[in-house]
Image (cartoon, rainbow, N blue to C red; front, side):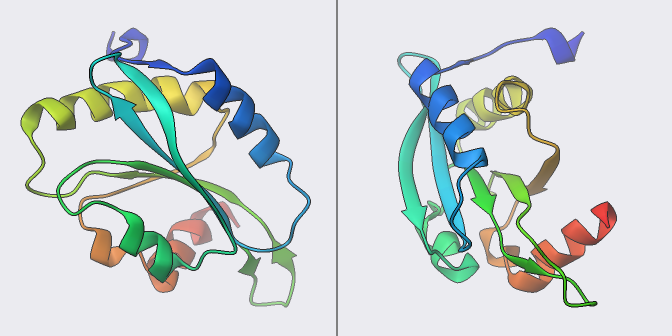
Length: 142
C-alpha cells in the first residue's frame, strides 16, 4: 500500500530537466539538487551543478533539512573502464523536523519512478557522502 501513496507530486519542469540531465553528453560530475516546496507539496529543482565534487555537493546539503541530490558520477572501475552512473541520494539528516522527514520519505518513491532512477541510496549523515561511500554503494551494481 505504501508504494502507491503519493505525498508530493513532482514538478513537470523538473521531470523534463531530469530527462535531459540523464542523457547529458559531458564527462564530468554533475548534480541536480531537489527539494520539496512544502506549501505547494511539490518536488522542485533547487539548484543544478556542473563539475562538482562529492565534497562540494556535501557542502551544499543543508545541515538540518532533507534533500534529494541526483548525481552523475564519473566512476573509474578497477579494470580502468569508466562509467557515468546516475545516482539518486535521499539525504535525510538527523535533527530534521518530523513533518519534513515524513514529506520527503513519502515522496521519494514518486520521484524515483518519475525520473526512472535505479541507483537509489540513502544517507542520514551528510558527512558519510564521500568517494569511498559512493564507490561502496555502486559496487553492488557491478
